Image 1 (cartoon, rainbow, N blue to C red):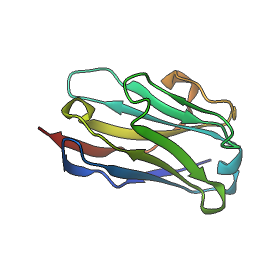
Image 2 (image 1 turned 180 degrees about the vertical axis):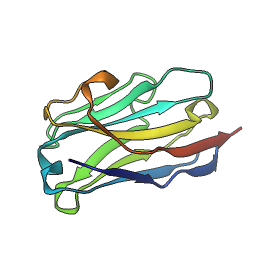
Image 3 (image 1 turned 180 degrees about the horizontal axis):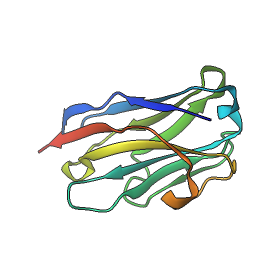
Image 4 (image 1 turned 120 degrees about the vertical axis):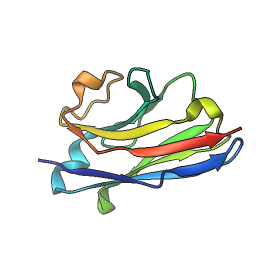
Length: 124
C-alpha cells in the first residue's frame, strides 16, 4: 500500500512558478512509477508528466513540455513537479499517482494509488 499526499499548490500570476510535492508513505515507493495528472473544472483528468522509478526516463504532455519538470527523491519517498512559465490554462487540481508496474503510463487507468489533489490557480 502507498499513500500519497500532495502539497505546494496555490495562486500564482501568469508567468510565475510553483513546485508541487507528493509525499509517499511506504518503502515500496522507490519501485513505483510516478505521474502527475490534472483536472480542470468541467474537463476530464489529463496526463501531465511521468517518471520511471529509477528517474532515468521522463514523459511529458505536449502542453507542458519545456515548462514543467518532474523529479523524485526515493530516499525521501517524495515526488516533485516543478512548474514554470505558468499559463491560465494550467489552472486545475493536480494529482500525483503511483503505479506498482514501475513503468510509467500516460493513462490514468494504469495507476493504482492517488493523492487527494492540490489546487493550482494561475491568474492572467
